[in-house]
Amino acid sequence: MSSSDPDKLIVKADKLTKLSLTRWSADWKSATLLYEQAANGFRVAKKYEKAKAAFEMASKGQEILSSPWDAAKHMESAAALAKELGKWNEVADLYRRASELYIECGRSQPASDALAKGARALEDAVPDVAVQLYIDASDILEEDGKEQMTFDLYRAAADVYIKLEKYTDAAAVLLRLGLAADKCNATNSQCKAYLGAIIVYLYAHDFKQAEKCYNDCSQIDAFLRSDQNRCASKLLSAYTEGDIEEIKRLSQSSTISNLDHVVIRLARKLPTGDLSAFKTDAAEEEEPLDENDLT
Image 1: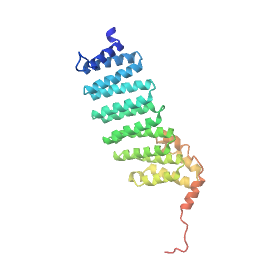
Image 2 (image 1 turned 180 degrees about the vertical axis):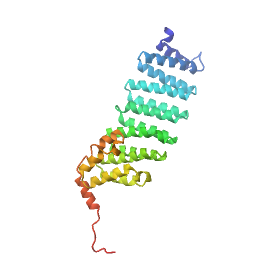
Image 3 (image 1 turned 45 degrees about the vertical axis):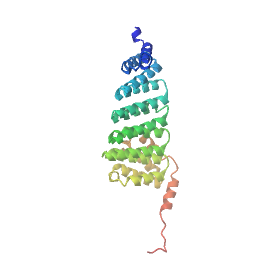
């Protein structure tokens, strides 16, 4: 039927939104309904480009009609279609816009979820953008005091950074996870995140940073008294002693086996380089006895 032809619905909707000699005000209420019908029709027909454009117009209409929630939903639909079309820049932009509209509604969780959907869609194609979306999604929740909902987002961001071999960034994200866990008294997640960060530094063959991370985290009582702290301490000692077998044994321990899969994979590959340098550094840092200093 011609009345359900999405192309004709678009023409009709466009006319309702344009001013003319006979139309002095736009009828966005009627037009938005037509854009919604057209968008669904195009999507069913797998005409994704036209469906995406129609959902964007439907979103604009709902925004003009002061319905940011419905506007956000349509923007998410447009973003999902941009993903189908492989338009990666648009995927990020549309999900960000959807997130902003949810924030207008005062809804932090769907706002964060929209960015997370964008991140998951972009992980393979544009990982640098994906990881920023994960972090921005976490920020939205933290600003609303919902730290306990950020854990999976931080883990996902760390996973992407590790795939990109950006180990310093990965460790920093795990430390942020630990801080978020601290704020909501999730001690187990906190301690696992700190041990994870130390392992990432060791995998990157940055012993000094791993040691600094351990010392900083050990200022926190919950970590100081944890199994994860004991495991980290043993790992660092094995590195300074150049004990490869002990490092391999520790990497198979139950404490490490309970970490996130991506961190476990790194731990099982330790050590990643020559340990003799660590032994030399450790020896140099031990102050020699000064026989003349008897005070």
